[in-house]
Image (tube, rainbow, N blue to C red):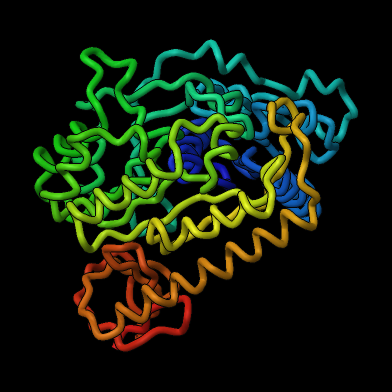
Length: 423
């Protein structure tokens, strides 16, 4: 009984998938396929549609429900698909009532009804509060995820996500600490704090506590927690307490994934980002001084509108200038309704070629990191498929089959270009 969920996109979708799974089990739902979509790129939307068509082909009698950011921002796109029974918004999917109503409703996909009858999507921009959601376990994951924040108050010109997630709102500190305690009690050794804009944490809470204060509270009040990790952060929002925690708390993992997007100041301005190239480099230098073993990842966009070859070269150079190791590279994808979609576009082939060059530089940076790790002893958390992760989130291929969720001290014998190899 319950929901079979396919999640695309961010770690927040993984967390929310478990909430939906719990509601589906409580409602007694059976043979329901949920596609939890991402709206970051047009490619993410295309992949979601492909998954929906494949599910209908493989499970002709199942009910197919589409939710997530793409369902929130373009519900009629999915409601128009004959394969889809229901489209549920990002706020609605977290409500037990939505899944109870689904239990009592007949399938709609086969009857050619009006699209609007398939849609249950409210105005996400009117949502201002955030009720804590408690999750006991994460199916198929060795680490646990805790949502501390949702939504975004910024308006980067390329990004549709604020319209999929609504305004920034945070979970009270006490509820976050309670959730972490429950997960550790259930056997999780590592917890990841996640959200849409986690470094804006606390702005809507009494006293406006910052992310650093939350991190220090978790580490203080949950001493049994072995590892605390952060999802993607916006470096310009990082507060002093967070930097102090990185310097002083060995249980806060030395891996930060940065939302940088570009390395040219004019491109950053046109993106409506709030940092400069110098800010990004300075932040990495400061953190590395405080935590010398830190490893950085970053999101980078290739081929943003108006980007010249010289502008792109500054993004390429940012990999070395910031000392980045793990890259998430996206060729620019115009999203309808965003200002960047109306700017002069870089040709698709050029954007893809620049993305390829960024990825090649990222692969070289990763190899340098792997070279330096060979011969080191690392404490790893085992995952499924004979893979583990070091403190720096570096993937390790294990030499023997190992159950997930274990902490092991292992010597790194070498690497294969993508993974460290355990002795």
